[in-house]
Image (tube, rainbow, N blue to C red; front, top):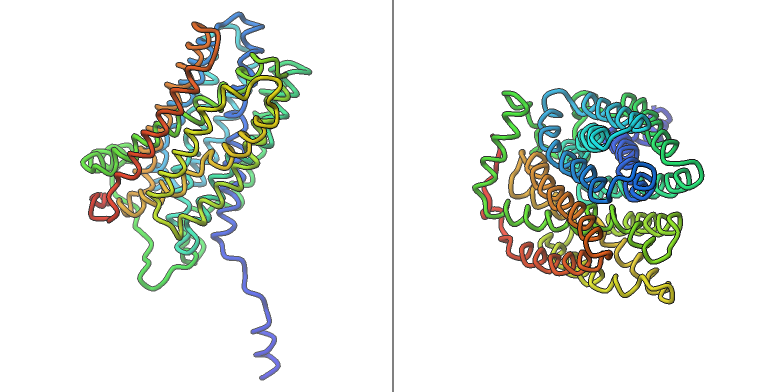
Length: 429
């Protein structure tokens, strides 16, 4: 009897399902990130082949960014009704189809449809509201850390795909690059179907670190679209919501919309090869992984409002000096910018997710989806505005300076969020 007891107690505990779900989510987010990394290295090839202006191509990027944001809260609500596995699998198929169909383009409206609408809707269904859904359902312990790791998946996707896309576009043209991303998104589907589970109860377990007081939320009644709109209506009555949304709009403008879309063509304006510039942007992804995971760890320990204020101030300072670093003789400072800016790239996500969860309770993931929609509005405005500025002035300098100043505004907005949950009503309808 003693030997049997010893054998039983010596068996290592099984891996909790929450970690398998987190792994599947990470892989899906990496796959979705691939085509979102492509625009920055395809702007010039599309301009050269079709003669479309950078403003026209940037308009397609803006549509992509807008849908990427505005689909997010509806996708979060749909995940409550249909489950994460169905929604994410369908989204990956949509991304693959949109990426692949671009090779048949002959007119700019087709770019808007494929690159903007199809890929924007697909990637939006796996946006950061998906991260908030996974962490809220499957984790009680280490929520901030897991949020940071999953958020870093976007940077990992950029790191994996951006140099490849740039190399393929340079050596073989932009069409093989688009097909490569299409195939990569398709390959991720089996991983999602095998490992992603909707709720802990589906596999007879509870959220990781859950105690007796942590009860799994029931599926809300009503349609998904109606619930998403209802949550927005209730959250919009809160001052906290508007402060978060305003700051996150500036976050999007200063990352995806500006650096993510225009860094490569801006560097090329100063004589840097596309592949070199894409490699630098991929390095942003390396340091972003470290910075976002560290931010998740800090979010479990430090006031998220203070973290956001610090992140925005540091990002703004780096953008203000960027125009000085493009000269060929200042390559070491450019490397310093890549490291510094990379650590801050999406470090804002874990504290923002934490504030949404704390202030809005069970509806936190959907509220974050709406906050993220504002992020993409800012990104879309910056993507188009920077392209238009480049067409009119022949330089991106004004765009860098404007973004740096806006980051200071975002820091102020973040610090004005009230420190207690009572400042914003819990939205659980």
